[in-house]
Length: 601
Image 1 (cartoon, rainbow, N blue to C red):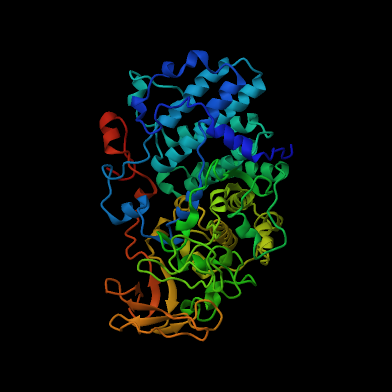
Image 2: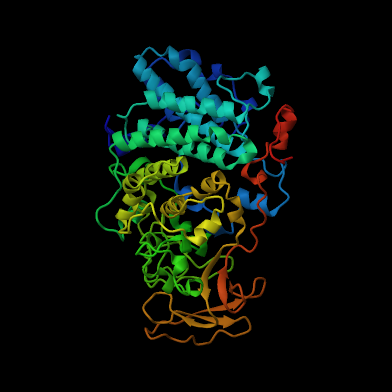
């Protein structure tokens, strides 16, 4: 079965906006406070395909621009509020961590599943919509398992007097079994020939493979669960589903032969509907369904990328950056030379031109990195709309699922199973490297001691390189925390992110043209008036550099030299506790049969 997606952008967007508010009972209401189903006309609904389509459209919830600022891990520093940051830096408990225990969308799904069977339509059409709903239930429960491990399984609508409201949590094994039954049903029945923007069989399968890999690796590395013996079952599922997408889906890596542009194009496109790599896009059109304003992604709002992430990118010849002489003290211009082209399609590089942003004060094409307290100095261009047109910025599609992930899922699953070979590397990892003109990954790759230190429980050099590839390929796409969690690598979150390196006070070139752009002064030094002009006749930008807590414009690790300081204190990651979340105290009070896991109270 080949990929038969219909590339119709506007109709599905319009249909979503025009959906009758069948579910208008308040999506943020508590599960127990939802109105009874009789009030939404169940008796007179769920009779036709149109009824099923309208209802299912109301279940849609996919990531938007937020994927690009949800990566405050070892990839980036943040000045904003993040749950993991709160947990690691405070005495967090079930009274302070209260989000996540919401069940309203599950009720909507189960209400549909209890009534869809009565529709007077063919079985294959009916099963398509049932499959989509079961896909959303699998997605719902997978997120619950990731947070709480054990949760109550409900496959029916509860009434306010139902005894099941007060049942204890079911085991992770039982809930996950049901999750993958839902995925399998959806995979078997959801159609491929749907409007672009709608869930199709390939979307189901991509999430199926992603979450099978998650569960397999989580069970393998998290011995606190005692489920290591069942890990391969899910790794094999991940391999099987990923292979089927590769063999039958008709997807390919987007590659026009422009290694310096093709990767970045995926994250700033006005139309991803015909892109051969995109399995599912969150589609936007100006004035119909606007993209959130991407301007705040740019370096000086909340997020700023880390040098640790930058160091993960290989040299253009495939060698490790960590092997470069003096890499620890390379300055901004030096560390971008001869690197994997994805680095300069993720980070704003020396010489990059800025055309528009509403949040970055210089706001000119003469772009010079801005330094600020609690920011690393690195600015993000992946996902950033560098365009003055409001319509352009509002119409950017979000690549929610990319074929690149399917390829890396297969490679990682086979590496974990011990069945990886060079042919698999060539059809997976090396397709991504080929796009950016990087040398292929070989089975006999040498061990990178830096990568080995990150993941001390992994003895396979090639698996470590697959993990590197995943970090680089999906940098700033919101995937990193899930990866660190499933690999039991949460301790990496304790490392305080730093940014650019400055060997001392003085003048520095940040644009790569050999002309100084900024000058670092001591905290006590006055800013010259008038400011000195550089060789281009442009006034230098001055920053007072000092230690954290001083009256400086930018903090350096050694006060007047060292790395720009991002987040000052990352706190402590407690294993295994911080891989999970507490059931909110208020919910425990309502249902005392629920039990906290792994040390939460």
